[in-house]
Amino acid sequence: MMKIKELRRRSFLKKTMVGAAGMHLAARLVVSSAGLGSPGKPAIWGGQPVRTDKFPAWPVIQDNDETAWIQVLRAKGWFRMNGDYVKQFEKEFAQMMGAKDCLATANGTSALHASLNALGIGPGDEVIVPPYTFVATVNVVLLQYALPIFVDTDRETFQIDARKIEAAITERTRCIIPVHLGGNSADLDTILTLAKKHRLPVIEDACQAHLAEWRGKKLGTWGDAGCFSFQVSKNLCAGEGGAVISDNSSLMDRCFSFHSNGAHRNGSSLHYAGSGTNVRMTEFQGALLLQQMTRLEEQSRRREKNAAYLSEQLQQIPGIQPAKSYAGCTRNAYHLYMFRYDKNQFAGLSKDSFLAALRAEGIPCSSGYLPLNQEPFLRESLLSRSFLAVHPRDRVDRYFKDNSCPENDRLCQEAVWLFQTMLLGTRNDMDQIADAIRKLQHHANELAKGRV
Ligand SMILES: *Cc1c(COP(=O)(O)O)cnc(C)c1O
Image (cartoon, rainbow, N blue to C red; front, side, top):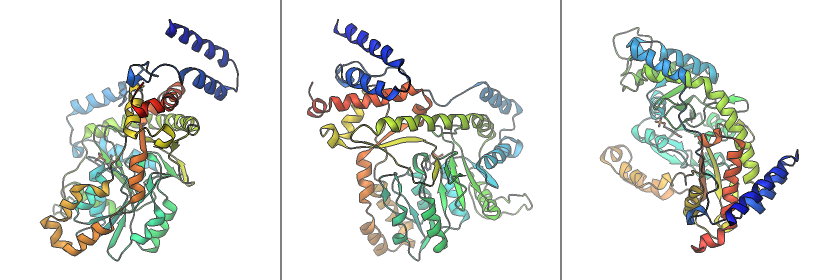
């Protein structure tokens, strides 16, 4: 009985408030404090979840994707040298980004690896990286037997703290890899100024930042090279896939050679241009990406619109702080919707318990990255025989002494992620995310004590 009454009251409230034009926010506050926000038990304790619907599924598959895939299959030109899909994709992706040149690769990791290799980064060198990133950013540095030098994170934006980069530059520094994490932009003005001053190349890890912009120009086009991933979770995807974009044609020639066992890009010689590997993209990936690309702009707009609305909602909740953007970031790709959670505003409820309770309310979420600079595998790599051959033991010891990123440690404790697919939903979906968080805050005391 209670439940039916409650539902009637809710729908009455909704009906009466819906008519009030321009009062949307007020309506939400009333519904939230008197309705959705407070009633019932938290779903984690068997109460009614705020949401039972699924968020939009990913990846999106439509008729054009199927047709393209079958075409490649039947034409049998599965290898990029026997077909035109990968070539066409490279052309269109470069155009879309506003870059002169594009090389498609097997994945984002190999795009980064090829770029580092093309720049001649190798044993003994130091490469500046953020600690708040996917491990691939660091793995490619280690694959070249170079040292990843971690520069602490700006907790406000979740990006590398560009103000701290200069202090990390030494005579061995050979490259800076800013990551545009979550599709938000690193502070490129500061980074590019420093890079110029110290004559360091910049490789942008834009693996999460398709169509994002800094001062109206696409991320990935600001550095010497920009690297993208088309792994299945990314905003543009083909299961696996990657790309390097650049305006520097000799750099791109070297990337090409590296990615295809040292072959000359223009096929001018049967000799090899250098050593390399095989990280070529298949025609299947190229064909699929060409189709997926047709939806990217529209999807990105929807994410931006929903993210802006969600931020309006979440900013009003004490203890929830959405990631900020630098003034130069004119477009955010929102691969992730990131915010910081302050447990003090939730009666001391731990982040893990908050996330479990939020999932129970029907809101998928993640606690994000662990502190990468503290990963045990780093020590193992740097103390391996191959590394010790080029990085003397005392240097490695010093490395670990200097390797602390306290802001990043704190961010890892506070960070919460929602996923890009959730931002492809409706405004009502965004309301439910905010409602679920308000509901947990309302019940924070009991949740923190662990009893009803
Ligand atoms: C996904 C990702 C990569 C690696 O891309 P893959 O295609 O998975 O190899 C590198 N850097 C960042 C920041 C990423 O998110």
